[in-house]
Each structure stands twice: as structure tokens, then as C-alpha cells.
Image (cartoon, rainbow, N blue to C red; front, side):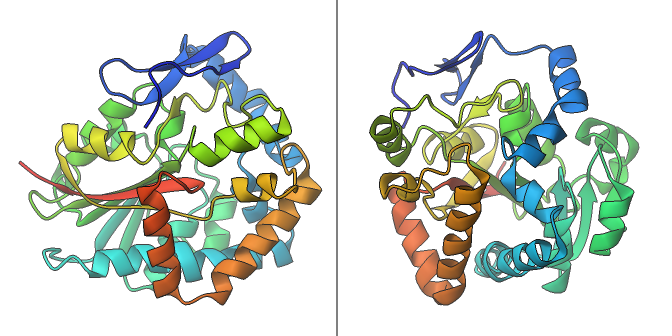
Length: 309
């Protein structure tokens, strides 16, 4: 749970806890123009340098790296989501839509697991999508999709939202729109975001005498944890069913492997994480990460929540 005051800054921005909703966010928030200019001119250059979104860089990297990333995600994250959803006896079907689907990896992976999939992505790269074998993509914002397809509202069993909320000026409004997509009483949302300002980050920051490297303006506007995310979902009309996390990458920093700003060290740490996760049974890994979530630990937090009246 976030302290009342967070001592973190990035340039002209500081991080504050939103008084109404309880998640952390930049203050002041950048303008839409500032955000648009950043994504247009700087974002992808930062990805290539290792300064942003390492998962996207790996998905767009050399073939060997892409193939390993694909295998790892399929055997861990996608199978975990499929497993958790399979435990929900009230689900009526296997109709899933991924909001902010990016390169289409998740919906391609869930299709392999026999889900009827679609995606929403306003910044679609058709070449990347074709490489994933993905075709059922709506190249619209969520707001545009809702306006254009009223017949699809309330028809989805599952809506996934992976690494999206942290980038939005109004994450609460996005969740309220997403609620319209899922079936009443039986629809589920699966939300995954970075688990920031967690205890291991604080200790790694202190040990390595670094500024909080996870604060990244103007693209990471919001910061969530294992307490604030399920609380927000419950307040916008969802009942949290499961809270889990994943491998706490900050362990490497505490063991002397300083990957912050160093792609070479970062790649090696990721390789070791992948080796670990592919070497242990899924049941053991899922149990371990759910127990770590209870302590607020893990690099990302994922919540499954059911739409309620």
C-alpha cells in the first residue's frame, strides 16, 4: 500500500497519491499534446536503447530472441490466464477481447488455447500483426469501438488489459468503459500493470543509491500496486477474484546485478528469469507468485475481477 507521501520526481513531475482513488500518479499530468509528441518522436528510440518497454523490444528483436519470448509467454503468462479463467465455473463462453493489444501476441497466444479472440489497438502495425497471424483487430480507440459497435457491448466473457492503465490520463474512465464490454454478472476483466513502489524496489533503490528508475514521464502516468488495483476495480463495479504477481526482478538488483540502464545486464537477468519460470511446474510457480502478492512483491500485478451489478 502506498504511503501518504511518495518521495519521487521525474523532471518537472512529482508522484502523488490520488486523493479520491488511492493510486499514485504524476503531478502535474502532462498534456495530450506533450504525450503525443513523446510517442511520435522519442518512444521507439528509447525502446531500442533499452530505456522503455523491454518486452516490446524483445518482441521486435532478432528471430531467436522473438521465438524465445513467444515460447516463454505462451508457457507462463498465457497458460496462467487460461488456467485462472478455467477455474471460474460461471463463465458462459470463451469470447475474449484484448484492449490495447499492441503486437497481438496475447490474442495469438490465447487463440492457441482455443479462445475466440479479438483485439482493439489504435496504433496497429499491420506488418507486426501479420507476423503474429492476427487479423481480428479493431483499429480504434476504446471509445470509438464502443460508439461504432453497440451490438458488441456486453457480449464478451473476458476483457484483458495488459500494461495499459499506467499510460492513460484517466484510467478510471477506461475501466468504466471496459465494464460495458463484458457480460453482466458473468463477464471478467483481467488487468495487468507494473507493481510499483513495492518494498523490494525501495530496498534496491536504497542499496544502489539510485533515483526511482520506474518513474518514467511522460508515458508512465499512473502507478499501481497489489492493494490499489483491486480496490479501484471494486469501486468501478467489479468483484476482485484473484490477485497475483510475477517474478520480482528487483531481486537481481539486491544480489548485485544492476540492470538499470544496462541492456547487457538486463538481457542476462531476463534470461535467468525465463530459465527459472520454464523450469518449474506451473502449479508451483502460480502458488509462489500468489503468495508473493500477499506481501506486495512482484514486478507486475495481475487482477481477475467479475462484473457485478
